[in-house]
Image: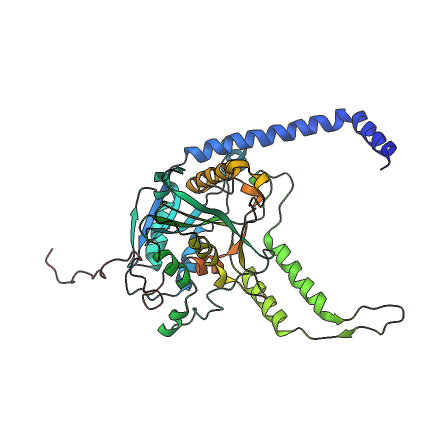
Length: 408
């Protein structure tokens, strides 16, 4: 290491401090102000938890859920005044699959200001469902080791770059009409696992969504963050470049031979191009398993983490648990750091936090891209033919319309 060069560099840096120090202080002031105002704005917003009860004979494909999800794609943050002086941020949503002792529930968490839009859009696509505002189940749980054994709190992240989509309902053929197709629903293993839990066991799945867009000054960014489609198109070009020629040109080597794309490469490009045409969300999946000591089953940790395997594909993308773990005893003396992490994750779950302070990029896990097609695959209402789990909360019977000739 040449210390002389380092000394000269520090000397130049010190010499020009009247230039860079004011810029740095202004930048830090803006960041601190935005952090404060955003927390203030978020805390001031009323939030609601809506439970969706589905009829026993629902037969709509995940395409119907994808249509509904278009309404949740709200990338607008506000004008410059709202962003920098009021701290307004893009609203976000949480789609949740929850098992409380084997009773399976569908929930949507949202800002109260967006409730009417959520209900209207949901009823327009699924007119037979029932929507009820319910108390937040997560707020009733406290980190009490004397009552619960906390097995797993984890983020579920992608195995590849955002450009590669997961295996979706279209790949499973669920965009087709025949009822027989619904028996191959990839959400079935998830619901079956949730329904298999015993009283005293809890399993939570949370899918956090925020409308994705190119981010500039209106989003509190001095340096623009490009739209994800830029990286997706670059990935397509990379695949084409890798497949264009066989062999490396050299001085004495023969000229590389052109080759055609493999079937796998064709399928990958086709899937990426289909994703580019969809609206996209900044997303994060969070899971939790905990239970009372008497019924705690460590095997269910693998069950909730493995519930996402059917959405993966070798040519495309997949899911894996976050790598935030303590591998050795000396990394976490007496489980102090593990306990702290569990408390933080529980608090993040309750607040549905990942996009903004204080839980932005929590545990160094950054939100990733999921399109409306991918989210509809992960969260939709299964038919009774696809999922016969008796503990899935459904409406006891279908509601019939009143006769038209009733006296007024």
